[in-house]
Length: 171
Image 1 (tube, rainbow, N blue to C red):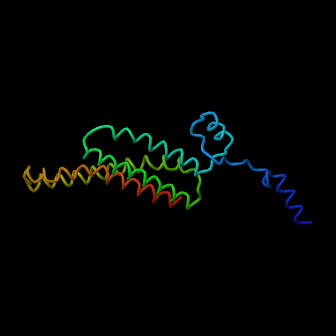
Image 2: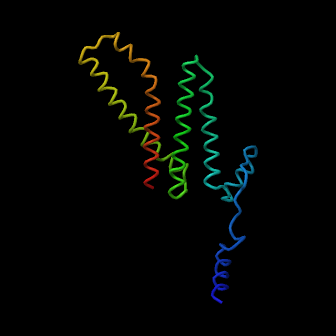
Image 3: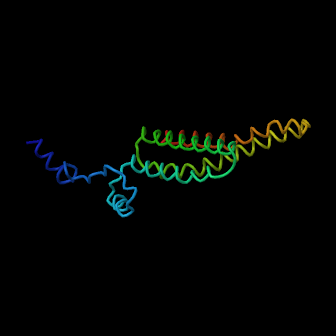
């Protein structure tokens, strides 16, 4: 008697078999109308939303490879791989917590992480270059370090993703 009563309550609440909306099995990457309807009907899982976001992120970074020489392309590929790896780590951090609202959280956490990280690195750069001026290091010695400055955006990017990853773990 109790089991039937429980099942009736679940049916009434729309949580018993067939009461929930069926999630989409496949992504509708070629149909904007179907994708729009999936969003409207709340049929997209967090995994599917992440895949859409991941593909979009890859697509927006791809034009960077159309310029420059081999060295610049190598730096761009390294930056691209850091960004995509960081994005995946952040997604799995969110997934291991409650697996809700990843894109929203990622975008919201990105802004303060990005801005504060830039301030940290600008401050650090001022200290380093101030040290060059303070200790009267010759220009020839500074030129030795210039190729390593190309890695600075990569370090900033890694730092930003680590901060977002840690923040997502706290949610």
